[in-house]
Image (tube, rainbow, N blue to C red):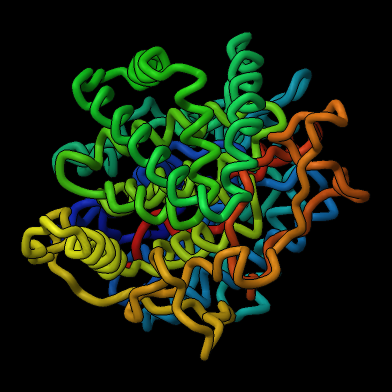
Length: 523
């Protein structure tokens, strides 16, 4: 009997993602090579993940298509919905690119919990693997291989008989020794760390300094909320926020870069005072201020801006976790504009986890997943910046906007995702990103012009509360539903914090990347 790990089935002609205009063909001949290839297919090492990889042109040797990843739901009753979401999303995305998948490879990746073995993980996730196979089958797309990777070993759920493969699994090869690893090294492609490591750069502090930062946010809210509610002072707060952010940007830029990510983030944290971070975080809750800050997206500004938005996201601690949606979205936008789609998707997914109604994050996330060129949004932001400069008496002629800022040609513009209302016939806002007709509307009218998306109140100081925090509403402790496909227009967020909800915060961290995406572009 042929051992399943030595099955002569060939997965041939699959290109390595990551190098524009370069095809590096390798042939994967066994489940072992498919298991070793996963980090190179995604560009990072997944953890706690369901991954589907589309296959095309099997008669001509085959090639990989789109990839989609979703976090494994903690509750078993959510597995069927996750399987449907992932399979339907990948098939629909592939069809939009003109190539329906002929078959798929499925991966389940999870580390054992305390007292578990890798085999226990494999058996526990077996029903999920079966759901993936039946769901894909209902779409007329067969799953030709389904692998579980746990504790440094892998198992196949497609073995033809119980004794086909070792019961304790097959050890994974040493990192960097597979045929795909060799081809990737030759092509100059490097695999990033795990998603857990990437998310750690964006998650709120859980150190002793978090309490000091929350106190600073309370104090900043007490000072800024009355001024923001006073329409006459709103422009002053916007100018002060942007000036404070520019100072931090210059400080980070002057400090240079550090190779090790943990050391780099720690150094950046030391360069920003609690009070400075608090003022900018609260100021960025205004959508016009956020849109103006988004213009720091290219050239010498991009790298320090990304570091600043990461650092501010880490400062959204305690009851202010929902405020992280603004800096996380800015981090995702700058990463995408700079060509780092992996961090872009993760940051934007985390922004939606912090606030599922944050429309700017949702539009950017969908555009990034659809493989659109960010140049249209860059042109939009450049145009807004040039118009503001032209309004000044001493304004110089606007500089031309050419190229994408990342060395790639402009290919096509951002289209508005289906189901997103752009409020036809509504008057253009006086300021902000939505003002440019060619730009997709990411924001709604300012609060003074229309009803707010969500009613937010602040505790009066003389009532013994914190002016910078919202009053808890009935039902606030309930689990939030996933974002609707057609969100309401995004209004200005008052710089007020969400009430403490530790359980909800834990769920937010868990679903930070639990939004399906395609880390590898369809070839």
